Amino acid sequence: MNLGFVYALIAFTIWGLFPFYFRLLAAIPPLEVLAHRMVWSLVFVAVAVAVRRDGRWFVAALRQPANLVRFGACAALLSANWGLYIWAVNTGRIVQASLGYFINPLVSVLFGLAFLHERLRGLQWGAIAIAAAGVLWLTWENSTLPWISLVLAVTFGAYGLLRKTAKLGSLEGLALEITLLFPAAFFYLLWLAAHGDSHFGSVHVGMQLLLAAAGPVTAVPLLLFAAGVRLIPLSTLGIMQYVTPTLQLLLGVFAYDEPFGHVQLVGYGAIWIALAVFSVESLWCREAK
Image 1: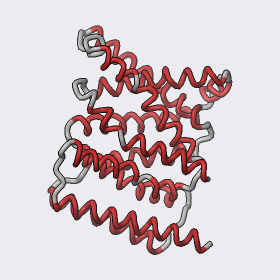
Image 2 (image 1 turned 45 degrees about the vertical axis):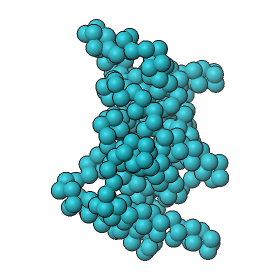
Image 3 (image 1 turned 90 degrees about the vertical axis):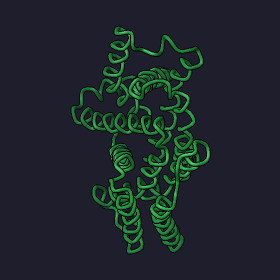
């Protein structure tokens, strides 16, 4: 469990610093960045798989329809999460994106309750209620549902649930997910090139290297996350996930000057209180045992 904690912590820290990376790619359309992210991720993962010199699992996985359905769902959730996040960062919505990852831990807890039969205690239910009140406050004050935040939270929470119950290991599972995403991404990039709309050939070498770096930048934290999620309870994972949105929020407000007024402070404050209540209660119960 301690090793799983370390894996997950490193993954969440890397994700928290993602705004720095994607802002460097702001001149390229988000969908094209997403496609490059998928293609270069497969290149990186393929090298990692080749180093292990064992591809029998891949052939076996392709012969199991249940595996293809499960990891196809994982791939769809990843692509939706990645694409929305890239768009949010590069359109000045880092703070809104961070809210999604503040909500995500409690979404993970609810998924654990609904699908893995994990039980919640009274204070844990109270924490979820406080967080829900924060979301309702933001919805009321802004006269719109924070859909960016909610979609990011639900897609990544569902991805974590599917990966926790998957039979393949972290590298194998990621390789299968990226393989399923690769064809659409690759042919989209070919289509852009054929129509003269590709940015890869027209940007400077530094930008090309940044696009190619999308492979390791994407794959490394995902591998760490997939390894960690299999070693620690989903409820513990939920508590740890606040590292990512905290870093993102700080970057959005202090590095990119995004607005954060009293309305956001009240809504986010409710979610922070909920996370604190949930974390303290969980630690107290663990010590009591």
